[in-house]
Image (cartoon, rainbow, N blue to C red; front, side, top):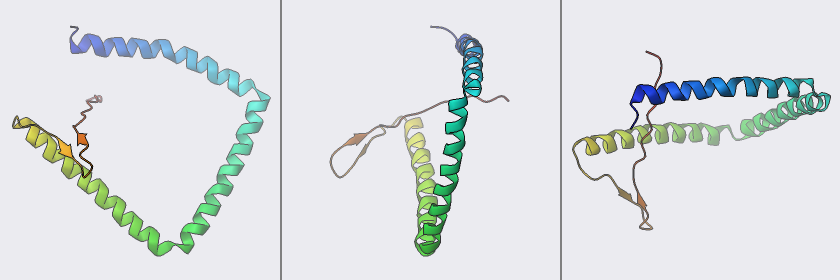
Length: 116
């Protein structure tokens, strides 16, 4: 098995190969009059859509305030769930959740690297 540095460097090399292809693609889109026209129409529709959404949200202000609180609670509980699962895993215990329909859930971990 390759070591972690070799894998990381291989990913960087693949991204370098990907870059010029994507740049060519973007340049060709920019040169397309039809694409530019559609993009402008899309921007207009997005603005109109946002205005309509804000009008409806204004009418449902109380409900959306409650929704914001619920979203924050979900985020907090997801962090608690992750912490509890990781703690259990580090103790060598099996990590599994069974819902009301007897569906089993196992944790899924994702590791990301950022420049230090």
